[in-house]
Structure formats: C-alpha cells, structure tokens
Image (cartoon, rainbow, N blue to C red):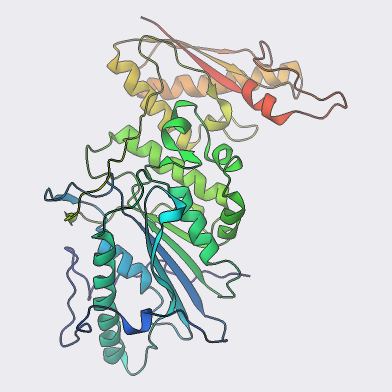
Length: 413
C-alpha cells in the first residue's frame, strides 16, 4: 500500500526567495550546471523510500511571450525545485524525475529519470547546506528545460498525467508524489477543455473516454498536486472562469482516485516575475462558450451539477452556472425558467420531487448572481431525449439515462 508523507510540498524557503533566486551561502553548483547525481537512473536493488515525479507546462499559455515578463502566482522554477526536494530530509533512497510537457505525449522532455537524491548526512546545518547545493544544480536543470522551446503545439495535461503514472508504474516506494506545474488549460489530447465546457461534461465523464485511462489508473492512491491551475500568462481568466477550471481539476482528482483529492489543486502562492527567452508555438486559448450567440442554453447534464440522488449543487456545478450567468449578462438577456428532468429509474412521484428540488437549487443559485423571479419546474422523467433507457433484458442503459438527467435553462430576450 502506498503511504503519503505528511505535509505535502515542503517549501524550501531558506533556499529559494520569492523571486526564485537560490541563496546557497558557500555552496556552489558544479561548473557545468548539472547535478552529477541526476545524470543516471538509480540502479540499486533497494526499494526506494519515496518516488517524486514533477512535470512542468512548457507551453505558450503558461509562459509570457519572449521579452515580455509578467508577475504571476506560482513561479514554476522554485515550485519545481521545492517539489523535487520535498523528501530530501528523509532517510532511504529518494527517487526524483523531472520533465517538461507540451501538446503531445511523444514530446515529453525528461531531464531527470528516477535519480536518487544525495543522502542527507550530518547535523541540521550540514543537511541544510547539502539541500542548498542540490537545489542550486536542480534550479539550473529546470531553468534550462523551461528555456527550451516546446516541440509540439497545444497543451495536453492528460498526457503529462499519464506519463507520470507510467513513471511510477510498479514503484515499490512507500511514498509516491506527482506534481504538475501547469495552468490546466488543456486544449488537445483526450481532454479538450473547450469541448468539456461547451458540452457540460463532468470530469468523470471525460476520464471514462480517455485512451490513457489505463496509465492514469497508476495514479490511484498517489499524492497528486496541481500547481498554477487557472493562471495563464496572457489574458487573465475571469473569476468565474478560473473557478470553473479549478473545480474541474478538483473533480478530475477525485475521479482519478488520488490521495486527498480535496487538496489536489494547490492554492496559489504569492506572485513573482515570470519571463521567457524563447519563442513558443501558439497555444489556442480555451473557449468558455456555453451559450451560442443569440441562442438558447444547451441542456446542462445533471451529473455536472449534482451528485447521485442529490439536489445540492456541486462546486463545479456552481462554477459552471457562474460562467453561464456571466455570458447571459454580457448578452443583456434574462433567465425565465429552469426545468429539471430525471431518468426513468424510480417512481413518478419520486422523480418529480427530485427534479423540482434540482430546478429550485439552480434558481436559488441564479438569484445570488443577480437573476430574480426565475421559475423552477420539475418535470421528472417526462420528455426523455434518449430512448430506450433499458435493454430488452431490463438492464439500464447508462449512457442513455445520463442524457435524460438534465436541467434546461430558458432565456428571455
């Protein structure tokens, strides 16, 4: 069984300043800037005590244009070094791997592969110096990697997660960590966030159709931390859009079954300068389009808004409705009615009651963002958009039933 080291990411505050500069005292990195211990994979037969894999987003959405620095939360370089050194003070063999990723699983650039951190020996001051020396050369490695132009266009976060899972495959470590430093704005691969948003797909539904789901199964029970989610280097997301991205990835963490999914999306750290010296291929922005121009709102899957047999709005459901409300206001329109629908499971009275409660929950939320006098109607299992919902043998057809569990939001002019 995998165990999680308490404390998560350990900030190496004495080593890295808010601006990402290393303070190493008399310790100096090797002249060539490499970490000697990191140039070869560990070949010992001893089971490692920990295994840490860190991947950094190297795409245009996450980095400013060359020569145009900006201040942003979660400075990628110190965040990466901190993550790689989180188990430095621990005993045993602590393996670390580091790569950058872009828009393809074929172009993930591994710079460190299952290398063993130097042993921590001596008293506290000596260990502090050893950690600083390791941090200094790691910083050089990370800066070199993120200073290299990506090889493939786009951003494929799921490919990065799958690669991390493969890296840990069969690991006997008692403590496994994966850290992704990324804005989470995936626009290619099995997760196109624009498609997921426009279709109202829940994270679990996306994961269920992902070709990499076997590799992603390696993440079950692993400590996963997503750093930088929702903070792109170009035009900042609106508050509602950022909340949707954060909550979406929180839902993905839960769907993956990682350790402590509620804390998987790391809160942002203080802002620091972020700069780029290389030209990166264009990274198409995520389209948060829910309402087509002058059209109606497509039916919102109930599975995005509510848990099973529940009428309490989920966090990602509230965030989705927040973006929707933002777009309705931008079009200077009104919301007239919300209608809830269920699938065919259960009695007529039960489904009418559940659908009414769900419609009312949506109406109550819309009132908090400025839409009053909206009517809530529960239609139960009436008017299915997909049939049959059962096989000839009487088994439920879940894909069809999911389409019938929905909420329809009717707009005025």
